[in-house]
Image 1 (cartoon, rainbow, N blue to C red):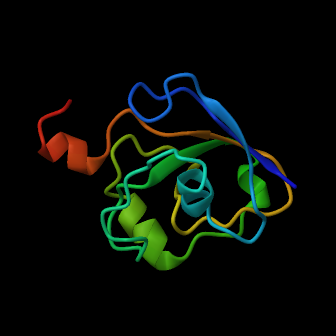
Image 2 (spheres, rainbow, N blue to C red):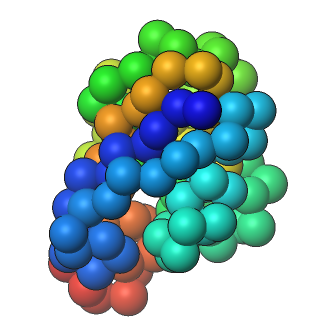
Length: 113
């Protein structure tokens, strides 16, 4: 069973976390299943960027992103080459190291930056 190592995030996971992930399930659902309350404003429909993560290790083990995901990622706060929408990135068999960006587009709109 692969692991997802979540790097520390001030609000969502201050100490970081190591979780046993379920292959074939999205990063988002794996995090939510372990009480890491990552934002997912569109209810995981690939219609926003609030669940944006940066995959620091294991990125190449993920299936390629769709055109719809790529189009949305262009609008993500803090976009990097290894950025993915966690609601679309399905965990494979390799361990992942994931960083949840400090801000999402929702936080910026709410003035939390």
